[in-house]
Length: 294
Image (cartoon, rainbow, N blue to C red; front, side, top):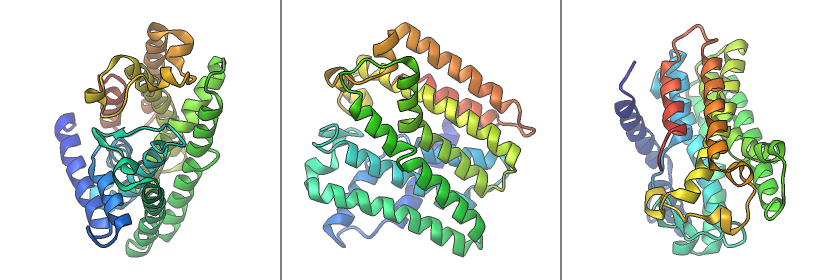
């Protein structure tokens, strides 16, 4: 079992290098600079980390999965760029830096986000050709597209916007979290598993683990929004409260929301116990994601 901090540090370095090599050259266009600006801003790289960790648990080498991990990060970054736009969350701060539209303007932020989304699928296509993994690439592309589309992330964003100022049930609030955040978490794990050649039973277990972890992560994210500082989070705080967003802490209170996150984490770890292989790395990573302070 690797030291988690060292694993994260080394994996993030590999992800960052691969991302920079995949992006268009700096200075080649205004859109290219906006793309690089948003990706270079950093972030936790959670989704590519989950992808790589899943593949490692299943015995795959990092170099065979790194392109898939980069595609996931590009989709996530594009979603943040669009979320920050005035028509959406209207945020001028992301990952501790001025958001893309605040630096490059709204039009360029939209184009750069679209370009990252498109590049993600280009990378998966190249992965399928170069690695002679056409069947895997098609399945991975489907997983990512479905998770990012109206049945997943975009659908969750729609529900989130429509729910502002409304009184929702626990089921409705968790549905938003499952689609808005959980879908791409699940895709990260499923794509890593598919790239590693996982069987159907392994895929089902890992999917359940990712779904539960994603829901817990969103709860903690909502809790931090109300108690952490902008400097700690790298984005504006109390934004959910100001927009009267439907979150679990708003519905149940902070203590009950944390208890729900704890419950989801326990359920997620129980799923990992169903795997024949040692999934300790994924359990440690899930714990880090859920029991974080920023």
